[in-house]
Length: 310
Image 1 (cartoon, rainbow, N blue to C red):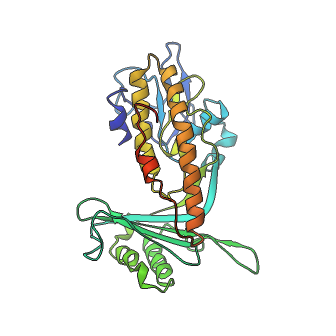
Image 2: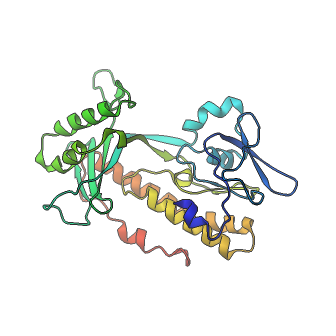
Image 3: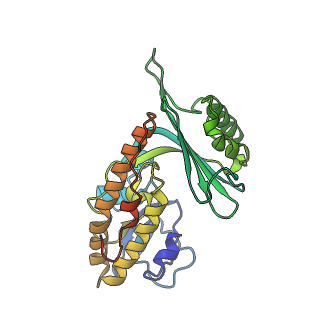
């Protein structure tokens, strides 16, 4: 939980929710977070002190990133419908995942993640440990192109994704069409999944990471996918979110002012996140074309020392 990681260094008092549209700085330097109507949003739980920093952890579709990239402190009415796609690139895939109260089985080595990439490309399957007696699975399905019309066809586009029972059945049909027992580990997990727990989302990347992850006035800073939305090819989205939260807390603890802390945080995160996004995109592109011998970046990821910034 990002709040838990930040709490030792930052007095977190505010959970704004999704209705935010802007912010204003009061005469004493404190912040009011504004709704689309321009009214101040009451803090939840009630604040014990004035709000001084907005930590934007609002995901890939980020209003906070809009403020930072545009230099504005609100979203004009004419721009609000564009926020869902602002500074984002659709990478041409849909990702589906869930956690199942079931183990992979005795034929799989405990503690390891397993994967399958369709030889002709287009489908990638993953499954691995998710806590005692639980397994996660994740399936990535690339868009297809009609050779005659050139039309791009998205998985489930003609049925929608609101009926998760339909999503589960369509997914099982897709896995079955691969016609190989090698991917049975994935179909077994999907069969055991409660449809209501399936999460489906288009794969999107931030078009720009930086040059700064904070507003010029030092009032808003980004963490998580809001800062570095990337392909999930290496499964690093949640890891980098937690890493970023810890790094932000460290910078605030070790610097004399919020402004200097946010400058340090940006300088530490931008290059690393950009590199991870680049490597993830390259791996996803290769994997979705049926490529093998994919790069292992585990050593690069885990040797990072937050305190030393290296």
